[in-house]
Amino acid sequence: MLRRTFLTTMTAAPLLCGAEQFSLFDGQSLKGWKSEKAHPQGWTVENGILTNGPGGKVNNLYTATLFGDLELEVEFRIPAKSNSGIYLHGLYEVQIFDSYGKAKITTQDSGSIYHRWIDEKPVGGTIAKKNAAKPAGEWQNFQILFRAPRFDAAGKKTAPARFEWVRYNGVQVQENAICEGPTRAHMDIAESARNPLMLQGDHGPVEFRKIGYRVPA
Image (cartoon, rainbow, N blue to C red):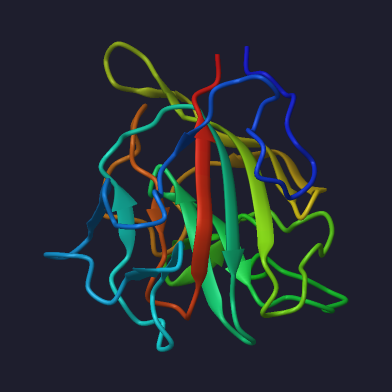
C-alpha cells in the first residue's frame, strides 16, 4: 500500500518525515539525465539551478533511472506566459503553465493532468481542482504520488496509471486522477511497469532547483 503522509508546504525537508529521500538533480551537473536527441542541448546548470535557457526551445530531458510507483517533489520557476511539464514515466504529464489569476482553468493549466491526443483531437485529461498557481517569476512546488500502470505476466495492462494525488504549492489539486493512456507530447516509448521521468524543454523557459523522490514502500 502506498503511504500517504507527505509535506504540504514548500520546504527543503524530506518528502516523508524520517524517510530517506533521493535527489535526481545534484545542483551542479546533468548527471543521471539523458536527452531525447544526442545530448542535452541547451540545458545548463548555474548556481544550483537547472534551466533550458531564455528561449525555452531545447531537447526534453529524461532520467537514466527507471521508476515504477513514485513519490516526487519538484521546485520550479517560469516567466510570464511560459509552458512546460513533468512527465511521470515519460508519458503522463502534470502541466506547468503561467496560470496565475485565471478564473477558469483547463487541462492546459498548471497542476492539471494534460489531455491525450487522439485523431487530432484532445481527449480526457483532468483539470486541477483549484488554481493554486503563484505569479510568474516565483518559485513553485509540486508534490506528487504516482501509481504506475499494472501488467499481468503476459504483458497485458490490467490497471491504468494513476495520480494518487498532486499537491501544488501546498494545495491538493488532484486526487485519484486516472490516465487511460499517454498524454500529448509524451516520449516515444510504450507504457510499462517502469519508465523514466521526463522534463519538457521545448515549450517555453523553465527552471528547476529541486527534484527529489522516494520509492513508496
